[in-house]
Each structure stands twice: as C-alpha cells, then as structure tokens.
Length: 256
Image 1: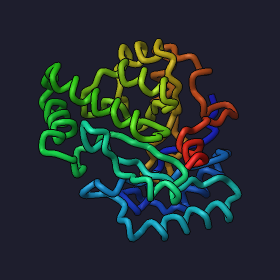
Image 2: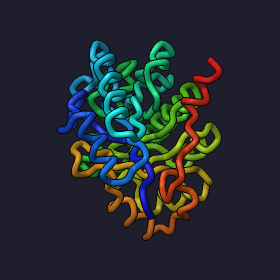
Image 3: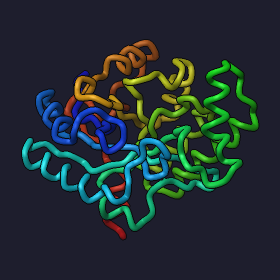
C-alpha cells in the first residue's frame, strides 16, 4: 500500500507546527502527488482559522504548489455545529477553497446550547468511560447525516472520535452522497467491529495522517494496522496505489 495524497494536514494557521511550504516540501519528498492544508474551521474557538487570514493561507498554498510542483489544496477541517447540519462554510466561502473536510470537535461554537452535547457530552463520557445513551447516539447521528445531506463535504474526519454516532447509518449517508470516510492514521476512532460493519455498507475511504508536524505527513502506519486486522478491501480506499478520489465539492462548484 502506497499513499497517493494526504488530504488532512495542519499548519500554524490552526495548531500545526510547520508552514504550508514545509508541509508541501515534505509531501514531495515522500512522492505524494497532492497534499491538502486543512486547518481547523472558523468556529473552533481555540485553534480556528481567522477569516482575515484566508487570503494569506491561499497565497501560501499557491506559492507552495508553484515551488514544489505538487498539488497543494486549500482546505479546511470544518466543525459539525448542530443538528440542523450547520458547519463553518457558507456558499460565499466555496470559491476560495479546494477541499471540504468536516468533523466533530469539542471546542466549537455550536449552533444551540442543546447542540453542545454532540461534542461536550461525547468528550465527557469518553473521559469517564461512560456508555453513551441511545438518545445521545441518535442526536449525534442525525446531526452528522443532516450535515452530509446539506453540504458538499468531501471527507468526514475521525468519525466517532470522542463523540458517539451510529457509524453504519452515517456511512450509508456518506455512500449515498459521495462523501468519503477517513481512516485516520493519527488515532483509532472506530473500533475494529465498527469499521467492519461500516465496510459492509460499501462506503469509500481515504487514509489521512491528520499531521500536525511534517514528520507525520504521509504516515499510514496506524491505519494500515487496522485495515489489515479488519480486512478492509484495498479497492475501497481511493488515495492509495496511484488512485485519486473523485471529490463532490469540486463537482458541486462546477454547477454553481
């Protein structure tokens, strides 16, 4: 298994250690054809990209692409903000960005007080090893599904990391709408049993590093270990062995 492109990396625009250029140089050294710069979304209250910084981010990505000769995608790891499907991007943002990731993060500005349970209750239950309630699982599942339905999301990041949803139902929605599920090589976010059930839905995957420093760009070790244990068919993973994903965000923008 050889990674073709790494679609989830961070820089100091959120809380990564290395610059856009350094990320791109490392990706080229590894023989990747593309790297995405996907810092945390605007609504992340601690590490979110500031809107005023977006022109600088775009400029850095374009310069890195020109310098390295590999594709450097301007992206964002947006936040799931509520059961309505709200996330960080508005349609006014679409023209600026190349790739659209979305995940649950505790330190996000949730749409309503009740929506805070998606991140905060999930985090608390995880820390205390409390079994989540079915009510919480249903609420979080509905929020994921509504967000996928309403937004042209390319990749769902670290599903069920410190939050609780029905992974199979979310995977079915991803399958039906053309959103990829990330298998993270930074942290195991689905159990082997969950991943096996998710595979049966026919959803398609990408492997990402979620790198916060250049030494982890292109790292697939943790993901590969789980893929082998579970027996995930490699032909379901679209960013390995020379293959590149067909992303819905770019296709959506063509019709705006």
